[in-house]
Length: 106
Image (cartoon, rainbow, N blue to C red; front, side):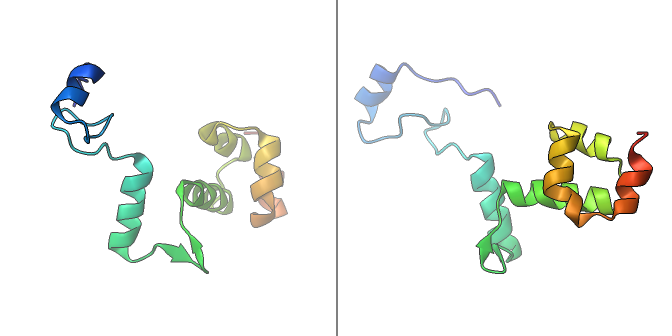
């Protein structure tokens, strides 16, 4: 879907109380975060141990599970757009030393 914006002056004249940025039909633009929160709500899993799930939660889940399942640290770093050092620092404690030792050649 391609969104086409009306000139702001025309949009404000038509509906002064309306949204400044909206879809062509005037409805609210739904962000990735809004969609993710709605999916968590619908699944009944909005929180884990008191903390609200977030996009970062999915990132963390991917990194930890990829490392635990033997995905190479270099591949995980590349997929996440970060460095091997950052993966080792933030997620390495979740994986065994053997996983890192066997994936250095990846």
